[in-house]
Amino acid sequence: MRLMTSIIPIVKQSQPGYPSSDGEPVAETYTHLYAILTTLEVLRQYLQGRQATVLGNQFLYYAQGFPKLRVAPDVMVIFDVAPGGRDNYKIWEEGKVPSVIFEITSPGTKNQDTDSKKTLYEQLEVKEYWLFDPKGEWIEEKLRGYRLQKDSYELITNSCSEPLQLRLAVEDELIGFYREDTGEKLLIPDELVAKVQEAEKRAMQAEERATQAEELLSRYREQFGDLSD
Image 1 (cartoon, rainbow, N blue to C red):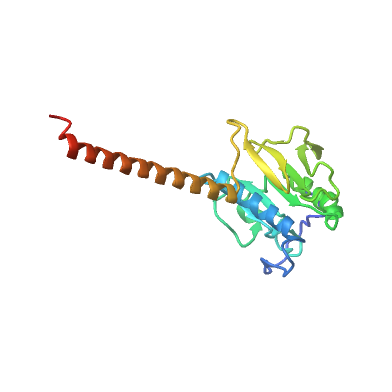
Image 2: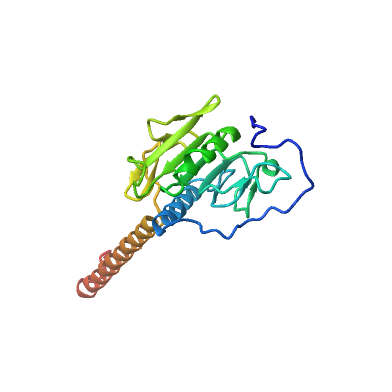
């Protein structure tokens, strides 16, 4: 893994503590928070049962012995690691860097998202880096992705994530995710609830129809006798 010594020191110190929180707010607005949580949950559901984890707004430590060298991606997907949550993520313990990182960006985080974070993710060799501006405040198209090509990021032109095997689409203030193999949309929590409620409604209607049919058959038997005679 290629790491620049200007950002990743080589000399290790004695093991310090690695905090899991800095007391800062998760997101600037409810819109940004909802986009983070929805992206996190959709990808978590999608990758269930696989050797992968999806973490949201948790410290990513990338230099052992230097706890101040950390970043907190809004959403990061790491493959070939044990599934489940972590209080924080230390690259040297897990042995894997994130494959995909999402930053839910705004004018207030624009410079950091396009400068220091983008440079760091390149150096850590994060395969894909996606910026989503849910309010369209500085990214006109709202969604912009970069894929690592050799030593640097290049703009993704087809809105598809290779590591995730998903097509991404802007859907109002959220990212929509679609399977590349089937075209099926990955439902957000609200859509999942609606789908379950609709299925329950159909099941109740089917049960009511079955009950009505049984009652009709029972009346027919009372009037005309057993149909098998």
